[in-house]
Figure 1 (cartoon, rainbow, N blue to C red):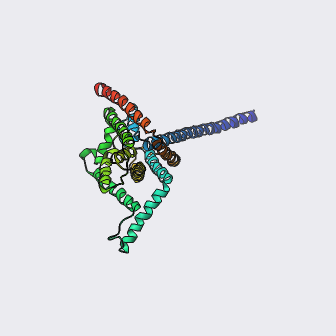
Figure 2: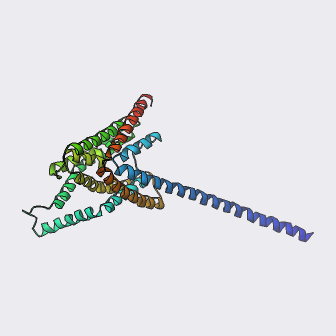
Figure 3: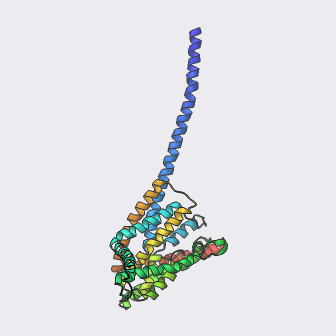
Length: 326
């Protein structure tokens, strides 16, 4: 009888120890399962966002406009960017630089060579080469962008105020700017067919692009690369030079935007998602840069104009209903 009681006691003691172990094991499995689901979702989000942002930024269909539509349909009207968005912008810049590495390497060489000539006092009275002129004018186009830092009260700086036009609870203004982008593309196509563009970038053209960029970058519905290309085409600049100038300006803008977005992000992102976002967006933008060259050289740009015009009409109609019923 003593031994049977002892067996019962030992069995109950073993069961008492096993229950916490089972609970801890199940809790561990739940934590692992939840972590795996979160990691999977973050990776899928990074893949989608990297490809989506690269396509809409490189092609003249407005990344900011599509982002505004997505946030509007999701009922999110906060203009703050996520850390992943910033990482993807940096990745897009890397893709552009890799796709046009010879051009960027040449401009970088000219940039440092200029300082060498200044130091050796050889720049005074000398005529700059076409590459150096291109570099000078590229830097000049960034000068008007300092106006983005103008304070606008509670809305922060001018850049923030302009960006908030895409998060104001209606797609009405987005539709107008989509229509403007489509109209610019059609005018540029018409210019290609009617006139032989043979001009180079000039000081005046560089300043025009700089001031136009104040709106082309932050305003939803406008396309930075598409806008710069179209404006230069309408000014009579060659097709090849117009596209190169747009890409050269876009890379530094993307890097600065990406760094600021990552540093001020309201929504953090995991290391894995950031790495995937940068790599995939760089690869996607590399392909898109090559495709955009093919699109322009084979007279396919009109289809992007039709897309912008159609999307502009659609968002304009939705925006009118939002103004009435929201």
